[in-house]
Amino acid sequence: MEPDLSKYRLEGDASMYRLPSGIVAPVVTRAGSESANTADSGGAVRISGVSIQHTPATKLWFGKVSNEPGYRSVTHHHGEAETGGYVLSGRARIYFGEKFEDYVDMAEGDWVFVPPFMPHIECNLSRTRPLTWMTTRTPENIVVNMTDVPDADLRDWLDR
Image 1: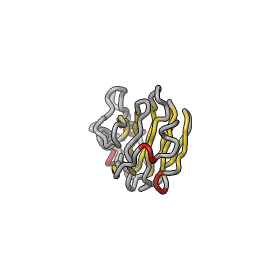
Image 2: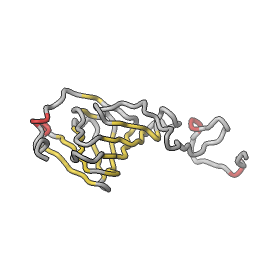
Image 3: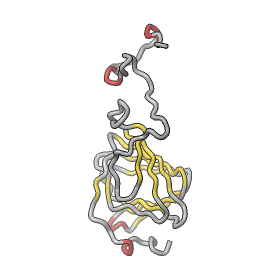
Image 4: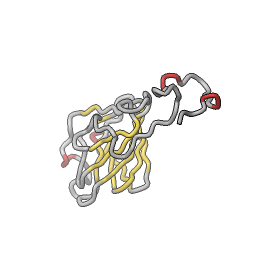
């Protein structure tokens, strides 16, 4: 059934988001049809639910990131992208700072903001449970991998 377009008004110009039917409407990405065509930081499994790959979104990437037990990413940053994260399940650590000597730990329900261009390393603190994050970035899922740091150089990593 076609919607009654006479009742449908938008403020501003949203014409770039028009669907083939001619209206601007929410776009749902159904479970199982997310895009796995996304940049990664060495072993993190990222899937996008809202991204340029399969929605009209042009200024937002929103996805789920899964890490196996004991995982740690390579050293990387996200370019110009502001990054927001939410720990859906598991325990996480992010190393940052001069020689990556600082870190923040997070548990289920914690949120994190990572500023643009900030080199960091993401870790799953558990040796037995997976870690799952919900992550959003503007404008896109930018991942710039850098020269990596040995595990032994990360404070409190080996004896966690």
